[in-house]
Image (cartoon, rainbow, N blue to C red; front, side):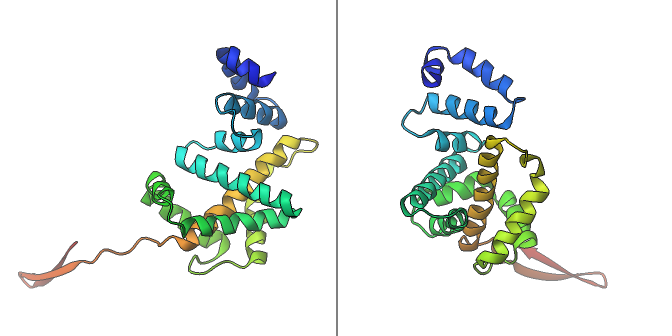
Length: 207
């Protein structure tokens, strides 16, 4: 019924989705998933919801595919929640080392400034990015971060908040894995020219 309504009355559904932003988390989850899936019937509601929660198109596509792949693997081998979260890190690392043109697309879309801020964030919250973070400390860093940054998601009897919490947790771990394998910014090579002004030696660096 939701799919049919989105196709037949898109304007009304758009207005409804706006009203749902102030509703319970589970209702927001259902509404956003239905609206997002209305125009993309080939993807399941979970992936559609993940995709709709990202503003950047490349990031949204890459992360929604990664989440769906991890979920399929956990279903096939009856994996635990811990397995699902660890798989997010592996997905990020594997994607960064792949030959996919989407790797550079993610870097370009995110921008060097934001990537720098992300690197500083992960160093501060989960340790140096020069090596793979051990599972235990990384999951503990995730727990501390999500409790500090998204404490409002832990509402009783609100299934939708659980989905959103998983989305943030997966994102946190995927980006950590991605940044471990993607080279950081390199300091440009500069040529030094020295000259004297009165009694002072001035050094000018030219990129």
